[in-house]
Structures are given as C-alpha cells and as structure tokens.
Amino acid sequence: MEDILPFLIGGLYAGGIYLILHRSFVKLIIGLIILGYASNLLLFTISRVTRGAPPLIPEEASQLTEPFADPLPQALILTAIVIGFGIQAFAIVLIKVGYQAGDTDDLDDLNTTDRLED
Amino acid sequence: MENELLIVLLIPLFAGILSIFSWKNTRLQKYIFIGGTTALLLAAINLLNSVIAHEVITLQSAGWGAPYGITMVADLLSTIMILLTSITAIAVAVFSLSDVDQSRLNFGFYPLMCFLLFSVCGAFLSGDVFNLYVWFEMMLISSFVLMALGNTKPQLEGAIKYVTLNIVSSAFFLAGTGILYGLTGTLNMADLALRLSAIPDQNLVTLAAIFFFIAFGVKAAIFPLFSWLPASYHTPPVTVSAFFAGILTKVGVYAFIRFFTMIFNHDSVFIDNLLLITAGTTMLVGVLGAAAQMEFRKILSFHIISQIGYMIMGLALNTKLALAGAVFYIMHHIIVKTNLFLVSGVVNRLKGSFQLKKLGGVYSKYPLLGILFVISAFSLAGFPPLSGFWAKFILIKAGLEVQDYLIVTVALVVGFLTLYSMTKIWNEVFWKKMTIEEESEKEISPVGLWSITPMVIPVVFLATITLAIGLFGEPVMKLAMMTAEQLQSPEIYINKVLGLNE
Image (tube, rainbow over all chains, first blue to last red; front, side, top):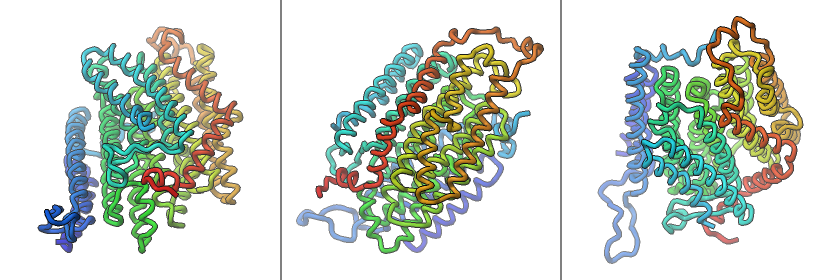
C-alpha cells in the first residue's frame, strides 16, 4: 500500500495543477478540489500507513504496543476535509456568481482588475 | 495569567455571536462591533502588560499539557500583533459607520468582521502548527466572504483570484504540516523546534521549510506569489480593504517570523539566501509595479508588497537589530498603510473617484486632509522624523552591520521610489488644480470634511499614532528590541510551553 500511494498522490497533484491551468471556471474548481485531496492523502501516507492495528490498549497492558495506526493524522485529515468542504462550497458559489456577473467562463477574460486604467 | 490570553479570543467571538443574534438590527451590530473592538484594545494592552512582566504566557487548552494538547502562546511578538490588530480594528470600526452601505450590512458585514478579528487573534496566539492551519482557514473564509460581499463585478473577479491562490497556498500549508508530522511525530511548535534539530537528514527539514515558505509567501504576498493582492485589494469597500491591507498580509509575515526564527532556525544557508533574495525582489517589484499605476488604491496595494520586502529583509538578516527593525517596521506599516487606505476612502467620498486623473484640488479645499495624507505618505516613504524613517533606518543599519551592501542599496532605492509614488498621489490628488469644466461635471455637491466625521476621526487617530511613533520612538524601539531578543532566544518560549525548567 505504501508503495502505491505516493504515485497516486503524485498523480493527483499533477492532475489538480493541470486542471487549474485550464481556462475554464469549472476545471479550475475541480482542480482545486483535487489538489486538496492530494494534500490530505499526503498527510495520511506520510504518517505511516498501518493496517489492522487500531490504537487500543489491551486490558492487561498499560501502553500501546507497536505497530499501531496513529489516530492523530486521521483526525487532522478529518478536520482538513471538513474545512476544505466548506471552502470548496463557497468557491463553487463564488464561481457561479462570477460566471453570471461576467457572462463568461473563460479565466482569460478576468483581467479587468489587473488592467491599467486609462 | 491565562485568563488575559483567553479574553482576547473571547471578546471578538462573543461580539460575533451577539451580532449574529441581532442579524436584522444593523444599528445594534454597529454598537456591538465598536464596543467589541474597544474591549479588544483594552484586553490587548492588558495582555501586553502581563507579557512584559512574565515573558511568555501559555494556555494549555482543556488542561492537556504540551505537546499533547493544543497550546495557545502569547509572547511579545504575538501580543504586539494583537495590539496592532485591535488599533486597526477600532479605526476601521469607526470608519465603517459611514462607509459601508446598507445592502452589505444586511448580509452580515459586522458578524464577518468580528469572526475575521477572532481568527486573526487566534492565528497570532496559536502554538501548534495544525491549529494555526485551522485559524488560517477561518481567516480565509471570513475574508473571502468580505471580499465578495456586495457582488459587484470587479469584486467577484478579484475574489476569484484571491480565493484560488489562497486555496492553493492552503494545500501547500497542509502538505508541509504532513511532512513535519511525518518527520517528528509532533505538531507543537516548541516541541518541533527541539525535535527537528535531531533529524539526521536536514535536507528533509529544508524541504518542509520550502512548503511553508510557499504557503506563507502567498499569504504575505512576496515575490513571485503576490499577484492576487493588487488584483483584489482595490475592489471591496475601503473599510474592508483598509483592514486587509493593514492586517492580513502581516499575518503571513508573522507566520514567517515565527517559523523561521524558531522552528527552522537550525539550517541553513539556503533558506537564508532564499529569504534575502525574495526580500530584495519583493521590494523592487512592488515599488516598480506601483510606479506604473494611476489608481489610488492600486498604488497603495503595490506598496504593501514592497513594504513586505523590508520585513522579510529584517528576518533574512537575522541579527538582533534586524529582527527589531522588522518588528518596528510591522508596527509602523500596519498603522500607516491602514491610514492611507482610509484617506483614499475619504477622498473618494468627497470627490467620487479613485482615479488619479479624475481627482485634483483636494488640498485647496480640504487642507486638513492634505496634511493627514502627507503625514502618512511621507512616513511610508521614510522621511525623518516620521515612523517610517526610524523603521528603515534600523533595517539599513542592521544591513550595514552585516555588510550586505546589495540589500541595503535595494532598500535605499526602493525608499526613494516610494517617495516618487507618494509624490505622484500628492501631485495628482491634492496639489493639481481641477479645471472648471471638470469641476462642474461632478454631480457631487461640495460637502464639508466634518459632515463625514466618522470617516475623518480614524484618519486623525492613526496619523496621531504615526506621529507619536516617530517623535517618541524610544519606548517603541525598546519594545522592538525586547521582542527581537525573545525571537533570538527561542529557549524561553520552548521551556515555557513544554514546562521545562533549566
């Protein structure tokens, strides 16, 4: 599992960045979401993937015995997913309103705030 | 002691909750916000007093001792940042009374401002990397909504850029957090500082540092990650952009100083050089960008970028004097930059434009406003005896001490070019005569300066603080030196947080 996940993460990062570089609003938002997934998965993988060893202390012991799955990164990822979900929901609405206001879904048309005024 | 720290977080939180409960009553929300920011200012002064007395104050949340629980830490740097935030918030609160329109108020402008304040204070006090990430996200979501609130087309366009780049930076932040946890198994900043030095392969630590460099770089708007800032800061109402300009990028700078003086201070020539090069290029690119602009707030936005360069320069030189300079620069910059944005708002209210070409003759009509602008603008450019002069003077002296003449030259040139931009605004907006037909074209009836008192009071207030920092700089400098001393000896912070005694 630990051998496959890095490639998956790399693929997700690459795909996310590839989509962000597109000109379409919708691809931009999907790219951002995938980039978020990639970071979550990185956090998950980098803190050691352990199978079938819940971090429970047996009744007769006083502390955990190795190996055990570290619960902390999973709690962190859960938090990050929830936060990411909220921000993505906002971003989707923003892009929809932006699309309606500008009547375009081409990111290259979003250059009026950068333009030098004449 | 812990209560003084906690109250700083509770005041904006309760103000936010109260103003949500009075959703329909925007007048009451105004009182709550002004009351809340005043209370926050008092709480911040109180916290500063006890931090000066006790060096570092920690709060172990729910009684879980570090490094297992989430620790909130107030040292001098974070307390100074909170004090500056509350001063800015008070000025902005008064300014908002006559700046923000009713439709924005109906959609929760004040609750959002309260939660923004809450999350900014939390970010300054956090002693845990993942906790800092959560505060950053809270800050971002409040600022996203404030940026887009009002739904005008430029605002939405600016907001899309702002949101996109900040989400990317959050992904970097999270990835960096993951790497740190994988390396050390802890996310408490003090614990990290101890454990990272024991990692055999320091290249991995540098890798993690690069992730944080990019994440904070986007938030602080350093070169080449700044492009969201000039694209968005001139679009929302002046109240919002003044607060963003004063505080939000400085949260990034704060995170830079915190991480690169405490956590990543064991290596490395590479990081130091990277910081120094970024500082120089950020200064130059920012000031050159400003030279091309002809819009009041865009010029000021580009100057934020160039000023961030000075702060990073102080961090990169990493001597006691340089760090003190960076802290002094932050104090000076937050006040002055907020004030300049507020002045642009007053001018817009009086003359109906932000375009330099369409403005003119403000000085002859409103000499007081001209003087207030000059105080802030010349302080930004670094004229003695205003606050900006001392800030630049300290940094340049620190640069000369370590004999880094290149960065000193850049800093001096950028100071000169800043003067050019400020003179441009002065000439176009205040000095230039308005032609008669242009005058008559304006539909806006001439109003007296004092008919918009709520907008003028904060400008006078902040200009007075600028003058005070400049004329009575010694106590401020002493405070900055004490902060630098603390930053240079992170053992105090680490021992207090982890409860070690040596």
